[in-house]
Image: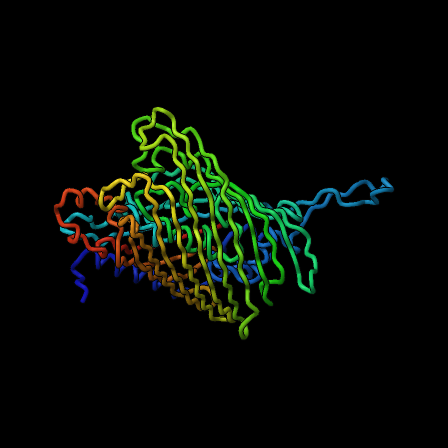
Length: 491
């Protein structure tokens, strides 16, 4: 039984009551990226089930580079006195602005424990492995401005579209900077072997940012699944700063069944060579001179014909392969002056959706394996250096949700990852939440994160382990559990 004399229990119960009351308020249509709706004249429910998950129409909109036949255009025609052109269109651009914005607020409270080692209240760094979007704050219980973004998103010309995000200021010291970047140039639709065929090219700064499944990449489970460790391997495609591009194409469609494929090349940006990226490898004033190497990416996914009415299924796989050379200056204190890392990242994913008139049921899954050929950091759990050892890790994640009328519902997510070489990679946990859209443009969530295995190194408790007192078993994974309320507003 819960002890309601406990201040934490009282606060949690109060917030739960508020969330339920808001959930019972008359809900109205919620927005995702409003500039897309302004561009097309369609509601966000046309493209999204529950953001960021997509409907078949939404996948098609993303596949075509955020370009739609519904867009209201302003056209500039050549002079009709020019007999050769006869008034041919020479310029077209959307009549509506491409600018949208998002503001989010957040309250989060860590359970704490471990003989007083794990604090109550303020969250310990590392729980972003489970939570999304925005993770949890590790400086304050309440962040009125937990995150903000400005989007330049929509049709640029009839064949060119964009999703560009600029992250804004927040309560924890964040500044304005480029977030996700996805610009696509797409061909007109053609017919091949009796099926619709479309192809194009994308420029991106995040792996699989333009993938129409939204199961992998930044919008899916991939980034968080393999991204939690204090050691920071030499390369991690789920978390590294990258730039690159892809050629992509699709035969068929998302409603009746089709095959999507893409191939791309990426390379890490200068941000990945910062002193802190390869932890334990550089000390003092040492810096990396640069990065050499281009990495390859391949993605194939098959959208099955509908199984029954309003049921859609996708299965797919992806691979990321590369060899990264990093050259260090003489000022750097290194095990070796040059790093060479051969790595791969393989994965399989699936999703199933039932999109009824009133009921929405979704299931997403991902199985992933990654190997880095050279690791020079320190295992945050044991304190032992890697000294160039090969590190592998495996993981899987599942997420399910149910929403009534796509406006109020519940969701659950479970993630697990493990490594034989580095103990600070071993982590697993689940999140259970309730979400609703009580008013226009407002998304409210109440959620609880439960850890079954916790990466003590990621929580910065490696020092207690190295000192040998207290025994690390006195820190329970449940000490890091978090209760949170999140509020997002889009316009």
